[in-house]
Length: 264
Length: 354
Image: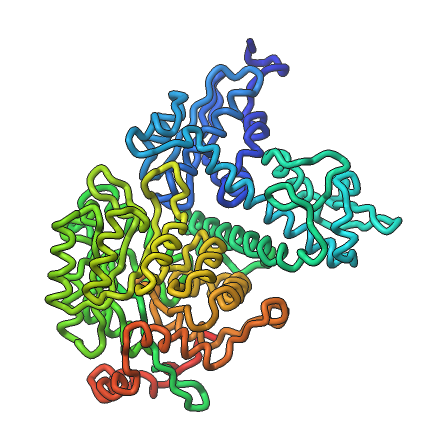
């Protein structure tokens, strides 16, 4: 139980931002905070209200519900928080999403007669976590190839052969008796690991570093085909991200997206 | 007609256009407002600044505006009118076949009029489809699987009811099924843009052509998987092509993918007017080159033949259009003359937006 003024369990906007830092837009595999979708966080003693916005009035209610529920759950876990409320703004299903999530309802309860099975939207979440996993892996693979590792070496890499240098935002891979530094790839590599774990895929130190979405390792000769698919997924997510960011900016002020460097 | 710097002429079919009325007077509720605002954001986000319209004009433009933007200014030779009903959001509908037919009546040689059906309309819907065929001899329909209808938020192409209607299309000779996936869909907990139902329908109705508008975005890679397996699945380029303006590299990646997975014969140009104006879109398509690294990786070309196919020949094939005959019938009409006049003015010529 907190009293305002005691720093131990005082609820602050900052702490809420930290707590929701990893809440994703499932389609874009990116944090809502980083995307700029969080409109405002209001802290009133132990009670928190988070308002968020989406790129269009029509963004699919199922994704909106996942995001809203995740925001509420993460904020609720912050020590000192008594209640966490989420408000979705400017959306075709804002009442149902806001009302349903804040009452702790499942998606079908919030949208009676309009949803079937997958009560907690876990299947939906899984599909998109998987896409995020493939996207991150694609970036990692290309970076490994660019660094000079060949297909056989890559296939032989274990989870333990990669570590993250957080300070430099690099990933470091040990192979062929030396270290390969993948510059500015640290965050991506870290997210790759996180998605892998979230999907329940094998991730012990001795497991292969590169696996498909079923947990199967890469076999020699498969790399090109693998890359073709993962590149498709990555390109689509980045395309969608660009579209959504642009629409969001157009909707809430600012002109259309300037052509800055692409991440592809 | 697009004419290149060295005099080559490219026949252009705009395979996706609308004459809509989204004016406040026609909006039925907040969804009607939300709908056109969303369209406007797409328009504004992806159009070069000199092509951005005011919201008021965007809500309701005139037949004259449309004809000018497509045929005089826009290099378009023929255009397909694709209805979108949305009668739950708009009093008279957003753009029904009846509304669109005004354009067909005024310019019969320029427009192809498509119809629509909604499987939730049951027997009455089948009758309506037959009447559309009877009155306008339609060769294609546009389906909006995410359209709301009372308590329903959408349907699937693979629903048994939809199959009834697709069977009727086969009987009636309505061979081109343009599918538009949309925001919400039933059941709401599913991925709203899942394109798997297209796969199911296409593999059963092999006599029909399924043109998936905006390439199934945002499920582009899933769409490519399906389209590569089904010989009767096509990609409509609306929403993808405009990206050539703000994000040329992304656009290049998507095009390389489409050409790799689908090939040059299964991609159709469409402006989705008035979402975007055909003029700058056609210019982008003509100027577009695939970056070398993508050419190497995907082993695809963007040559003149490919441009011709995408810009007109693929749609001509699907709609059994004799291109020579069509060109002759419009060569000296009012609109062609105006287009030539515009072209001969300084700054009115080709290639202004490479």
